[in-house]
Amino acid sequence: MRLGSLRLRLVAAGTIALLVALGVAGAGMVVLFKRHVARTLASDLDVHLRQLLNGLEVDADGRIMVARPPADPRFTVPLSGLYWQISDDHGQLLRSRSLWDTILPLPIDEPGPSDVHQHELTGPVGARVLVAERGIVMNPGSQIRVRAAVAYDLDGATSAVRAFAKDLSIALAVLAIILAIGTTVQVSLGLRPLAVLRRRVAEIRSGQRQHLPVEVPTEVAPLVEEVNALLDAQSREILRSRSRAADLAHGFKTPLAALTADAARLKELGQLELARNVEDVAEAMSRQVDRELALARLRGKARGGPEAATELAPLVDALLGTLARTPAAAHVSFDGEVPAGLRVAMDRTDLAEVLGNLLENAARHATGTVRITASAAPVIVTVEDDGPGIPDAKIGRVLERGGRLDEQGPGSGLGLAIVQDVLEAYGWRLQIGRSALGGAKITIAPALIAALRGSEAPARAPETPRSILTAG
Image (cartoon, rainbow, N blue to C red; front, side, top):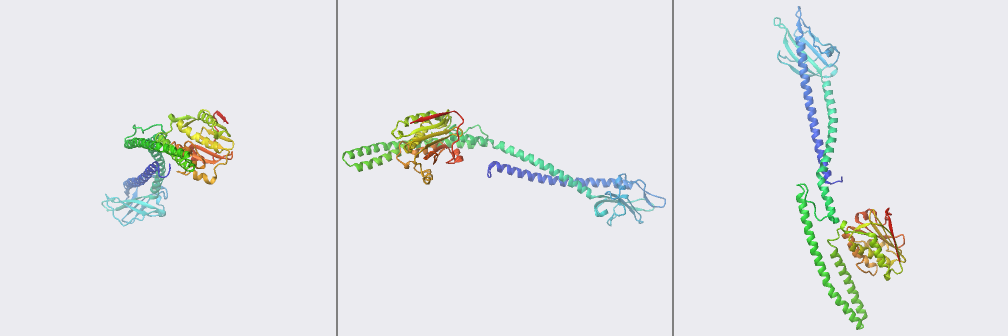
């Protein structure tokens, strides 16, 4: 997921929300557990206190005694964390063995017979203890007032809370990971219709379909309807533009024919220089008109796709056979390697114009050899010659958008400028480099493949059977 993607934003927002929610829930659960421990501890102290008071008796001398001590064995273990202590108003003090030689420093307080007071004090070895105390009168006749207290070391409760928090944090971390994965899966499933639409848009661009499918989730249905309406409007506008361009180009045919006729009459009158100037202007205008006619035919049609695929090897054979009979190729031999059965997603007429112009241009500048090669995966076609080539300083300029590639010499047909226009209409790119033969090396490939390869990367040799092309 790239930075700024919708999926990353949704996953990040969901994960942050989960972490915040789990953090708050974890903190709340720790607080609740701490309160539960406190209530449980207070309840246990009340039980111990009742057992201690129920076991008190007064002997014949009027002294209090613990006839039945609490049953919890921790009262008999020194510094076990559970203590009891009894005192009366005569100064008598009884305490559990667990207190050893310490005394609980009870605050000045007078709890009633039905009241249980709780305090947090500093107990044995400086530990914090929770004390529950209660006051009773043992002998109504002698009015012996007894103050009984039971204490519990809070370190044990704190350790329990910490252990619970640790276990809970591990459980919440595992839960967070599971929920984060679930959030990622949920977001991916939710965005899957958008991924499908992206592929369908790519199919529209490649010519495999004309509209987006309407069987989409309700949330994206308005977007699909708007895009389909935009595609229909664009198609109508392209059709109108083609018609206007064709009408305009055809409108120039008659004036150009008149200029050509005027040039012929000027030659008959002996004004040769003026006639050549008029012919040059008419020829330049005619090439521009032909270019606009070709572009008008091309716009809206160059979508690629299976219906526009052309088998490359037979077309190259036909082009080389025709070109070999022209005066420009009389001194050139052609050879090449094209995989049998290789199909190019381009209309046959457009592909013939592209390759025919490239081969004719190479033959015009070659010293003796022109080579055409192609690879099947990915589809890359290369035309090379052994001529002087194009200076490195001019390669970048001739490849600039809007630059005229046919300024290197006298052209014919559509010219290299039209070649580039046709390739751009199909989403292809033309690259110029230095050939191993010594001349120019022109490579055509889909734009993405061309961008990954670079202008000087050699085409990969195909693994499928090849047709060996020779002419000359």
